[in-house]
Image (cartoon, rainbow, N blue to C red; front, side, top):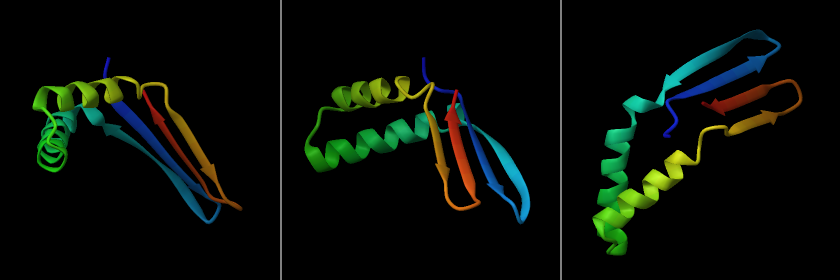
Length: 80
């Protein structure tokens, strides 16, 4: 199953943090076409192999949880 939503949260003690819900399902078709086009031009890759590789990569993304913290700033990206 491909990821459908990414949650991006930015926190800073000087201002109220923001939380963005990014609908990833709107990005898949243009992104797949771009990746296939670039892979076919640059690496002489078969279009079906490029689509299969991109599909496998995108299907492995759900459950990804990235948290980056500095002194007082925090950024969290979670892919559902």
